[in-house]
Length: 553
Image (cartoon, rainbow, N blue to C red):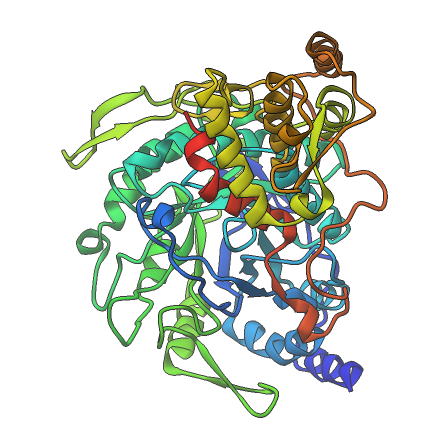
């Protein structure tokens, strides 16, 4: 049946050869023939179930996270169902926000490739399986989560870009998150280069005047090695009969004019009123905007968290029937009627200078509003798991047991409690902290939450003269008999673990056989594709929330 579905989909589409690779030169995208490439995309991901709001998230602008996600690229039947409609819509790219690296994506990726459709893939996962705005960090477990996804998709020719994050920074008070995003971009770029991949590395920012300009400047500042390759703007400002002027599209175009990398509208489409006319598409691909922008991604093919703004409706016992709406038709016609400029040619495109990084402190935006920028220009180091493994095995005398290490709630609570104990004893958690505002990163700050907890447990255990009860923590820890007993020897071993540490390096591939527990069997079925957040992602989120007060200075 599945083969028949793909065969029927193929009959409805023209045959296509292998997609040309897309690359950036200066601030523009080009194909292998030197023609300018414009993204005509649509967001392609069904919404997961929203989780409960947390106090930390509410203090950082809200945006409650889903607790589940559906990997649309791991559902061949659904891909075959949607493919004729994606082609009818006239898109050449889909943006996918969460994928499960443990599932098989061959059928969907091939079908999209054969239809001439590229993918823009976000590396993060729901429930703060990304850089956490409430307690940001760039650690070995999050890096491995990202590189696992890259490894899963590296073989496909139609990956246009990987996003390291989406709308993480949304208020001036969480702009200290920026160094971690920039460090992630630096390391993921190096990893892709080591694998011979031409995929771009991007970030999508919210269209908020208090932070937008500084975010774009910061993520493209200094030099190519630490800059994103492509920058996206999620904007919903154009509605109804708006024009370039009344919508403010002329203003954002001017603000992005000197950006040294390609820019695109990574989400667009009015979300304030119906119907959505999509008249902004003609403007996006007009001579007024193409000197700055390289297309955009309409939001959204499926029903999203905001109701009534989807382009299609699914029905039937297995959602096998697709019904398009008037918004779909309007977007289809809008995409079909654009003929963007081919200028500048690749041979005449130049590389704009990378700007200096924004100055920390109070500022005034381009609209005259008061704001502040907290991010240091000093970036966190490249996480190295081998260092963290060495520390836990040879330099930490009291380690979390497997039960605690695999329970995010216990792990987060122990980190919080352990750091409070150290504080009461005139000790600190500085070695495991990371501070994007001061640019000071503890020597173990890049390690995963379990290694950080082992540091805390060991420090307390040693300070209590190795009393057996001091390495219990309600039966969640155990003495490491393979480590020395004296604090001086433990410190010597820690120094040896760090001796080969290179602050900025190319991330290494995960150890053979290393997998994340996704709560799925790895099948191609809907159960596998509708995954709970990855275990690693859960650790990132819960530790950030529960341990945030102790870990962030």
